[in-house]
Length: 106
Image (tube, rainbow, N blue to C red; front, side, top):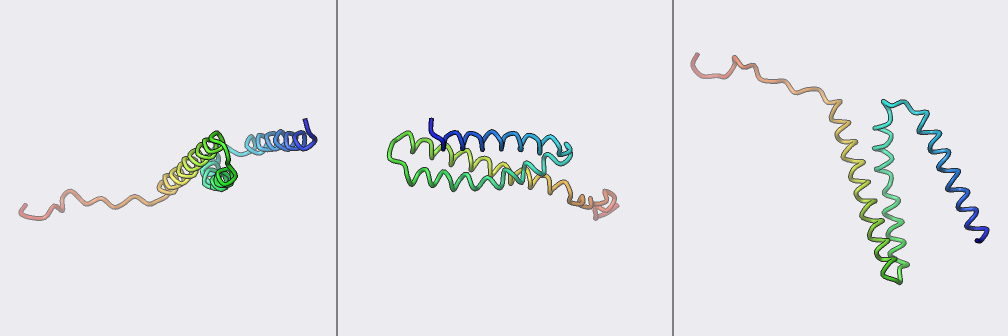
């Protein structure tokens, strides 16, 4: 195993530990807004899938690029959907028509 692999593995493990520590300190009421925003930011993964596809020379690299692009697109769309639903909760309710004002003869 090369030194570069060890370095990348150490960075990955440290990022997992830091991510877990940060996520555990966030109150549960803020988890959904934070995660919906994070999902929307995952558009970077779509760019990574395009880079993989540009350098692909075997069928399994094409398959990996397709799966990465598909799951990243689902993640981004889900992030925007959840964010839209959350923002919809902050809209004021629309006024309902008074049932006695139906018009016509009484």
